[in-house]
Amino acid sequence: MKRFIQGQSSSRQFAQRRALLQMARFQPFSVASRWFPNEPARPIIKTAFPGPKTQESIAKYGEISCNKQQHFPIDLQESVGNYIADVDGNKYLDLFTSISCIPLGYNHPEMAKASKSDLMKQVLTVRTGLSVNPPLGYLEVAEKAFMDVAPKGMTRVGGSMCGTCSVEASFKHAMMAYAGKKRGGSGDQFSKEELESVLLNQAPGSPMYSVLSFNSGFHGRSLGALSATRTNPLHKVDFPAFDWPSAEPPRYKYPLSENAEYNKE
Ligand SMILES: Cc1ncc(COP(=O)(O)O)c(C=O)c1O
Image (cartoon, rainbow, N blue to C red; front, top):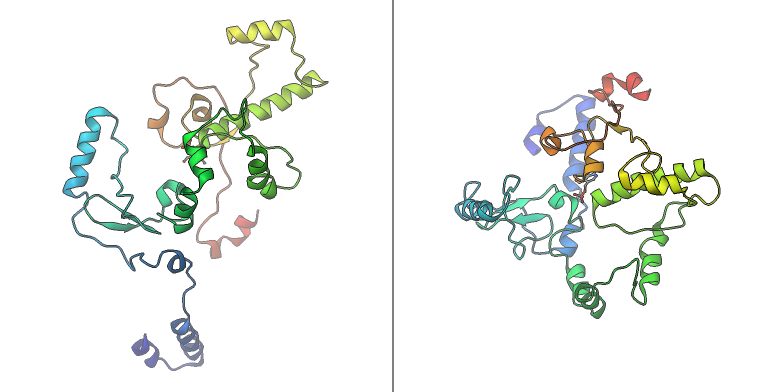
């Protein structure tokens, strides 16, 4: 950088030079070193990818299950912070946080500490059907975990297991709210005809409501969520789908500096 700076002369370049010197003094802000002092400074590559143990493991897995989407098995003990370890001793910078499943980083010390608590032991070893038998203390947990951070106006909470379940639940909630409004009153005064026709997958119990989704969105792999998903045809092929509409999402035009007017709209 010094050599680059020395070769410049005009006042604009002088300003650039000052900015670069400031950048050189700047200590990048990182919380990773606070929590993961043993995190590597850069990726550690010991074998070509995929390494021999990785290939062997994926092939063996393929004998008992589907391995077509497997990138590589993780060495969970060796993974740390932003770095994911494979079974061949390589450590890669994981910009994907295991598809957002591990946003706090691998082996976060506070998570490890919490996992040893009596509460965690109980939660993991004695699982109850929450909607029927919520354990003592669950109300406080739900209030602290969800209601403290609930968006304004949201006063109730429901749990679900995964992204797909959440999408399905939101479809159902929207449809129930709509049907309830149409029905008037409390919304759950169903007619005899509705209760009978729904068991035959027929209207009026099973109404032809639609979900409008964007063309390029992924919403999950259950049949309902797949009908709104329009990313990879291989996620959908061979399965029946609801005949739901889709729309083109608004997209930024690039480069941003040349399309400011268009993008403002
Ligand atoms: C936007 C979106 N919705 C739904 C899902 C489905 O989540 P899950 O795999 O937890 O069921 C995903 C998963 O990648 C997602 O990215």
